[in-house]
Amino acid sequence: MPDTRDVFDEDHEAFQESFREFLDRKVLPGREQWRDSAAMPATVFLSAADSGFLGMQIPEEHNGGGADDVRFGLLAVQELAGSGLIGPALAFATHTNVAIPVLAHWAGAAQRAMWLSGLASGTTLASVIGTPSPLRFEEVCGGLRLDGVAKGVANGTSAGLLVVAARSDSGEYAVVVVDATAAGVSRKAGPELLGVHGADLADIHLDGVMVSTACVLPGDATEQFRTLCADEQLSLAAIGVAGARAALVWTLDYVRERKVFGRSVADFENTRFALAEVYADIALAETYLRSCAKERVAGQLAPSQAAAAKLRCTELFGRAVDQGMQLHGGYGYMREYPIAQAYADARYLRWHGGTSEEMKEILAAGVGL
Image 1: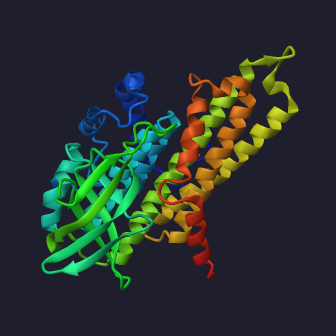
Image 2: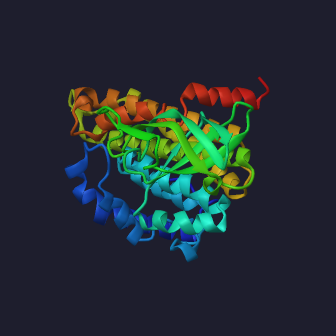
Image 3: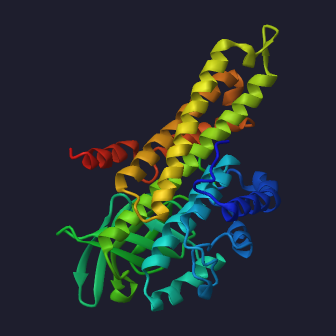
């Protein structure tokens, strides 16, 4: 593993170790019981909250950890993804890495008192919709009217709060928190997917949803929208690169043990060269991801940087898994091998939170095209 001390300090390392122990004790032993479920059991979120992992960025007066630092959440989702839990990583990231930071930073005092304690305790889960393509709003007497459809929303059926990014016909932005049971909100669980089990994906329809100004985040809504998008893309990049490293580890273990024509698969030059390239790509991606995390902490992460991280790290996940499946041979298509599940997870991750093509559009705009 590369040296990460330029970005992560002893507190981060201690947190990562504690979260890894939490997974080993509370999550992985019961994983087979819900591996193919659409959503993680609510007890997993509640257990994470009891251990102090769910509201790290929430102020202490609202029962959080008081650590205004996105790096803790990034380490958590990397541990989940590195354990092969891509769907749960998406669900966790949406709640902890995307919804909570924007609320903890931008919400007013009354709004914080209304929302943050439930998010920290895990009794209320959050979904984020409208990123990177905002829904539509129009101003009405006393508030806003929201309309639109968001597909494949993580925590979609179980969320109690919806953090909605919307834009008016005149191009103005608004970030609004909506009660998931409000009139005009309808949710439909997505069809059974090949991968990302545990992400609780759903399509959410907002049909004339009326929200008061008390539920609109104050401040620069354009910057709020950019923060939501960047935090989501950065989390997806972290999941992608951790998934790629996990795929490499699984493949290395396999090729060392598997023998063909009396030789270990690892002894063949093609195997060594192919996996060396994957390793090199992961090393570069991890370096860039750490750079982006550092920029995010400093409040200087540009939209193009986050988009580039999401694009390259999720595409890398796909390449690492493709190479791993190739070297597994026929066994790579058997579900008892984690590389098979990762194949489906990696393909989906390139779509979630904005497709690779949408990331390229952001990057093209960043260079003036």
